[in-house]
Length: 87
Image (cartoon, rainbow, N blue to C red; front, side):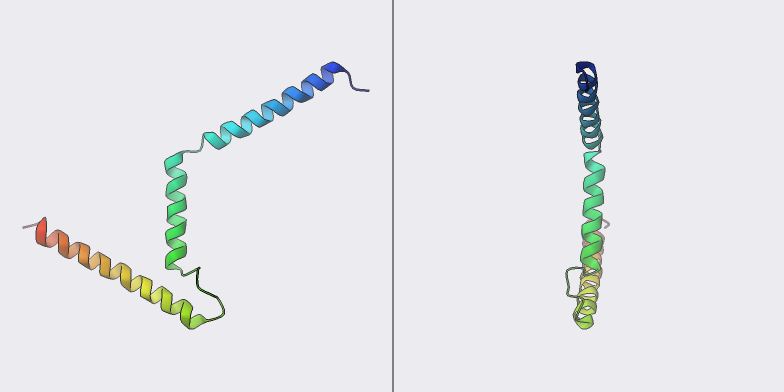
């Protein structure tokens, strides 16, 4: 039969564990976690993870299209910088 002291210690241990869990969760750097989430979303986007795996042509078509779009954006950005910022 547990006495009041054992019950109080068990309750304090539960509260301490909950507090430590909350501290660990809140101590996570907001910027770092957001950066990781954005990097993973970008990786998944360019890997075409949203395409169905049953059609390899669609999968590779999306990958190639997204890679070409990225190259086009880089070229346009370079042209913009070269035209307006460098002269």
